[in-house]
Length: 338
Image (cartoon, rainbow, N blue to C red; front, side, top):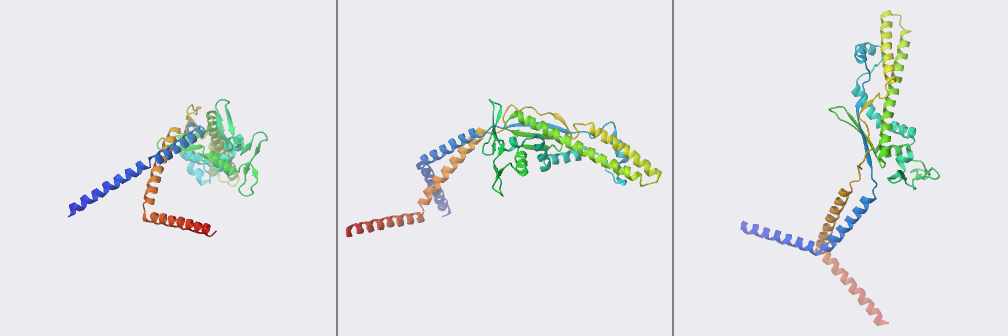
């Protein structure tokens, strides 16, 4: 009895599979047509997306001191902490701080303003290899009048993009990552023009080095000012000697910071002008678009067939025919009465 049931189930499965293939074969024209439409649309979209190029640099955390200064500062670290002064040290922590600053809103805002990059960041929509010029979106920025046409979300008035909009647009093009094993930091910028991508990357790295240098100089200067004030408040000779020693080391630290243009990072592999585009991947777009169209067309044919084969659909069809018959009969009766 069980064997007969299994045979029957297998037979039903074979019938269902045959029916499935027959349905797909009957709807092959629709499947081919829908797939072709998606394939053509994918090609058109892939060709319409502008090329982008990625400039990348590999950086190493710079030594924050030299000539044995780190050892001297390490010996004085305990005394300095007792005096309420931080004398720094630890390249890894400074590197992590620098990376977070590079991603921060305030730093990016200042970087864009200092280098006058608002139009290139927010209004560019492509790049012409022939003329080596950016293509500016006229709906966002008018080049002739140098006026912004960005609509404010709150007031509805046209004007320049907000600081947040510029930050988001720039952040989408920048990637900063650190290799946990080696400690090396990779920074990349992706843009329409390969030359501009490299130029921005060099400026970006230079800006963070300058920022960290100024930050350290200000920090050390504040430490020195604080220590000098403490010297005037104590009459203990030993404490005054300790303060003078720490001030001497802080002064050396300040001199090292001021003399180091690559204060935060040193380029291990400097940026180069990229020769090959990083995106879009047009072949992949076309393949995925065609596959999606094929799956959607198969689903459409199957759903359409089984929906029409359902009792509910049959009942709706009968009701529709009855409605048409009733309407036709009413019209004929009306004509007959006339």
